[in-house]
Amino acid sequence: MTSLLATKQIRITAVSLASNAGARNIDPVEDLVAVEEPLEIQVSSIHGPARTVSITMRTPGNDAELAAGFLWGEGAFQRTDQILGSQAEQNVIRTIVAPEVLDGLERLSRNFYTTSSCGVCGKTSLTALRQRTKFTINPGSPIVEADILTGIPDTVRKVQKTFNQTGGLHGAALLEADGTLIALREDVGRHNAVDKLIGACVLNHQLPLSGAILFLSGRASFELLQKAYMAGIPIVAAVGAPSSLAVEMAEEAGITLIGFLRGQRFNIYTSAERVRLTSSMETKIER
Picture 1 (spheres, one colour):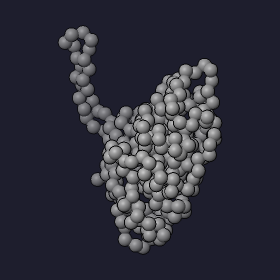
Picture 2 (cartoon, helix red, strand yellow):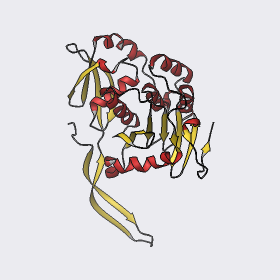
Picture 3 (tube, helix red, strand yellow):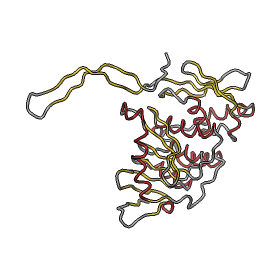
Picture 4 (cartoon, one colour):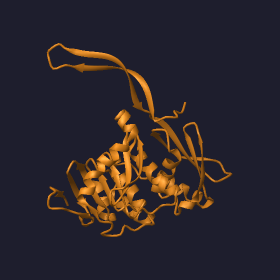
């Protein structure tokens, strides 16, 4: 059955080994874990049959946003008003679209971008993205202060309710250049968290996100930079490391890519001109 909540309470055995030899605590306790369930994403016209375009493992909640963000990132729509609504059933979300969207669905199904683990060709994928995205990343804008960047992880962590309960979810957040939090989404999948976040903006007709920072609680992969590019996001900051193809993607798109954003340190991999640095910070710029 579909869970209505993002967490589930289970009974576990908690083991603690004390420092002195032979001492240990073994306690049966109740614990919360993040829920993971499949979601089938379907597309149809208002009265036509549904067609399955993807199945993903996700944390239940914000399923319509997840579907909208996924489809937008894959270039299924040219305008946000081409999404006419959605219908949810047990682990199924049906996105209802304008008829012209269905005309390109066959092409879409043949050209979904593969994950980085499949050895995707960077130049081919980047060319395809440039042909599909409708937004241009404006060079040099916005400008963000270095100390604003270093404060983002704490800002986001404070509102990551489900992560704070379970420790088992990725977070994706949108922030203004002054560090003001716009929105946050959590999910067991990094890509799903970003899809939910961008999907909310798609459904609210808020694209492009030309003044926003996308914060990632994990590493920065090619696919996540792709999604940022398709949404017109100029700055991506991640707690973890970027992949080589993510750096290439950011360089080609003109996105400022920041990695290892932890404490008072971070690395700028591309388009460093958007970050206003202060002399008191130890900042490593890699090119």
